[in-house]
Image 1 (cartoon, rainbow, N blue to C red):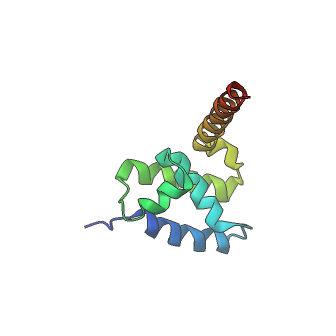
Image 2 (image 1 turned 90 degrees about the horizontal axis):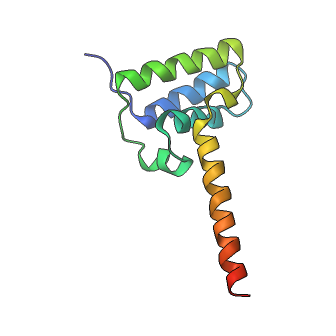
Length: 104
């Protein structure tokens, strides 16, 4: 029977792995990859820390980690979640700005 990998297990393992491979911020590395994989924000990762990843998710994450370590690929290649959050933040900012201008 194969091991069930929960989000917290992956964070703990990958933090050590990235650290062994001389990454400056090993925890941030895995958080960014998980955010892209799970299409969520940082808080959600920790709220869902007991959630297991399925085999497909593990396979994708494994390949990303290998590419990141072996080829030192930039995180931007994996940061779809980052882009989604940036657009959401900008749109929320614009919405609040319009509301504020309505009451002035």
